[in-house]
Image (cartoon, rainbow, N blue to C red; front, side):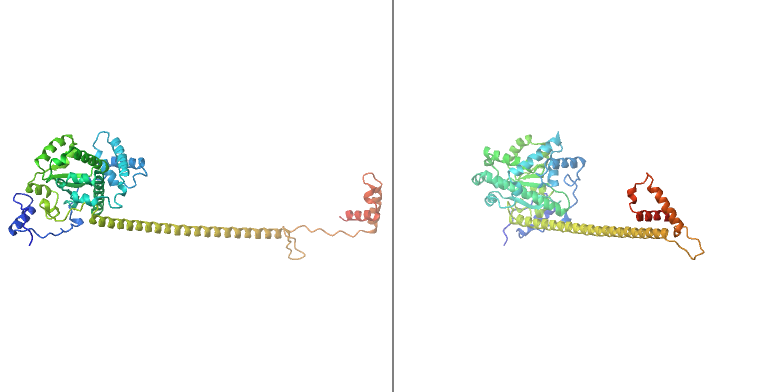
Length: 445
């Protein structure tokens, strides 16, 4: 039989909470502990706040400056992560200078504490850390924002000291990076930007041991790291079950805080009705843990939980598939471009071959025409003996008449006269036969 329920609601809160508590009180027992159903992505109402606003020209320009200035160092920083820092510091005086400086500081701290590799392997001492501090993400708000719960009052400072503050700090940094990854995954699922989360601190059990100088000093150091590595990540902080000691300390501490930070913090007393009234304004009753009067009996996951490991594996597989699809699409695009280039090259070569063949044909035709013209220039076309030669024909040279005996005698006499002349050397005509034949050729021509 289920144990009797000790969390009855006797005052005004949300209608759902009152109905549930009345039913439990009437039945005299608590409902079975069942995991609440995971809300669908379409179940969240429309959100219009700082996170979902589109980047304006100032933010886009500043983001480009950060990327150029720290190129090669911020590959692991998404645009939403950088925008979280920009919007966290935008309202300050000399905001641009501060943002550039703080962005560099963020990168330095992530490198110093090896945040980019912190999720690759289990963190030393995380199991002991989880036993000393019950904390973790449990459900979301009505708009889908992850909610982080921490039972701070039940944490024993001596146990953390035995664990080692450096180990405890390392576990805390891993937990914060896990939360950042969860928000990135949730942002993708909901299809809207999300870089903030809600924090609920349960201070039940808080006492003077939590305010020792050493504990306060260590807590301040951890909070400073949170503000520098994950600036602007808090959407709202609800502190519940606050004893008078904490409220007194808060009244002193808030005087040193930024007004924007104070607006995000809500202090609630120890009354269950007040706690549920505050929480149910943001969170559905089935997502509120049972130790705060809600309907979720699941244990807080803590650092390095199996649930987060499963979530991270699924996200890595999705990213792997996404990269593989992009690579295939890129390869297909390159293949299509290569085929197009080959086809264009083939067409270019074909056009070149056709142009060469045309030029060769023109040359052949010009050569044939020139040959025909030359042939026509030397060829005489005569139809018959009585017709005139064509205008292109060469003039016919009549044959030389045969020399008579008188002409031969005249030639001989002329030669004798030439031989006796001083104009012609006698040696040129040493033989009479040569002179006769030479003169004969001259006369005949």
